[in-house]
Amino acid sequence: MSFCLETYLQQSDDYEILLNQAGFKDCAMLIRYKADEVINVKPGDVVLGVRIIGIPPIPIGILKHESKVLIPYTKPCHGTSVVELPIGEDEINNIRKLAI
Image 1 (cartoon, one colour):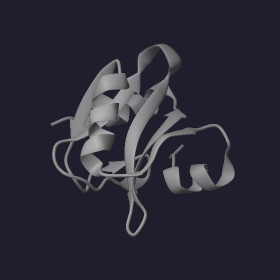
Image 2: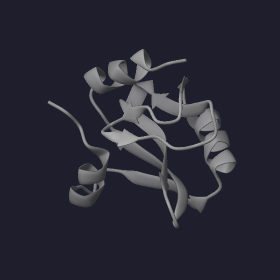
Image 3: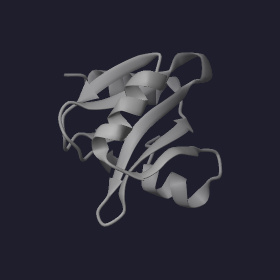
């Protein structure tokens, strides 16, 4: 089953926005500080059904004990946010495969 972040954020309340309408560097710093594991990906990689935009390398944070992920989510004209959401182990492994 494929996961789509855009659909998930529209249809679910099971996520938290940790930082909203911020600069990308601030979001990256928060992810690196809060995550147990940080996976760096390239701009344009698809993570959770969305192409990730940002200054490379782009950090994706894993909260192992909670099975959650922290991602920078950039929407043009709105800035970048850090979104924390629960995901399954399969999706975490898919993110790990993108590591640079």
